Image (tube, rainbow, N blue to C red; front, side, top):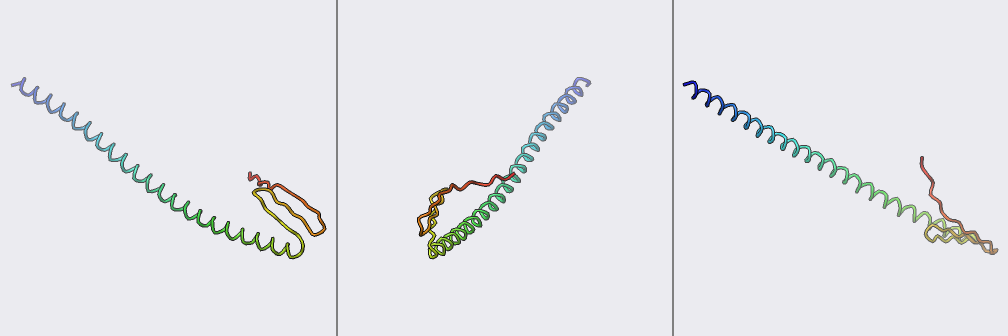
Length: 109
């Protein structure tokens, strides 16, 4: 009789340990999936925000280009020619004076 109880006790103990390990593993997998879903949602939200900022920057770039073109036309009417080629700006006037300057980016600290 004692042998049967010992065997039953051993089987229940081993079953409890195995069940506990499986439950722990399942809980870890579920937690990992939840974290992964949260990270994906956060990254998608950030990507949407970055796309909106990119569109805003494109619109601002277009607006600034139009302003520069308007200034160049106004200066040309006064006899000053301004040409922009990449990061080089050349300015010349009717008297033949000419200046070429490289645009330097301002360093932000």
